[in-house]
Image 1: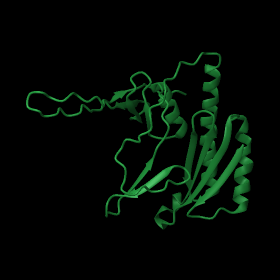
Image 2: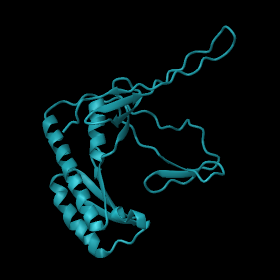
Image 3: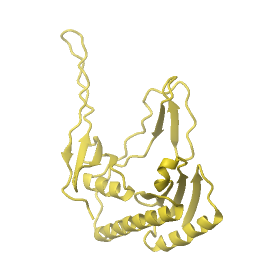
Amino acid sequence: MEIVVAGRHTDVPERFRQHVTDKLARLEQLAPRAQRIDVEVTHEPNPRQAAAAERVELTVVGKGPVIRAEACADDRYGAFDLAIDKLAERLRRARDRRKSHRGKVPAPVSDPLPPLEDLEPEPVAPEPSEDGVVETTLGDSPVVIREKVHVAQPMTIDDALYEMELVGHDFFLFVDAETAQPSVAYRRRGWSYGIIKLDAAVTSMGSGDGAAAAPQAGGVAAPAGAAAQR
């Protein structure tokens, strides 16, 4: 398993790299299908953010869903210890889920949706970074738009909530396997979740006065479960 340590707005000394490598190597038994663990260390120079000046993000890449954890502290060793504890817990959860599903025949998965290549292109196509992220400015304004395209395999709501917990985010964008609708799962208060779906159906052209009917689009929020899948 490869371990890649990188610094963002900061240098990463060899001593810290070795500390990270030694500790992450112990997690290999929890992630036997992992091919790489990316470690990103970020420093916040603002003195007002001294209590969270160091942020460490850990990302496990391999066969299966991406598993991520991050934490902040006043020093990078403390931030790393908090992040690796979160990562270990999510790896255990993923391992237990694999065990509970072992022996079951997986449901057939339909073909993934085509890439969003029909969108109106930018006048000048910026070059994507190594991780596929593209940043553009909005006209002459200082507003920066950050874009990243992910391959979307249709999944159930239960699987979407499971993968959202693995990356530790408050929302998760996915394609519903039952309805083929673009959907967003999000965390609500307590241990409940919500689902927003897009109805992208477009009505036909009107024949009476020649006016076109407006596209039918909307979102429906509904709780997806009373508790997280632990």
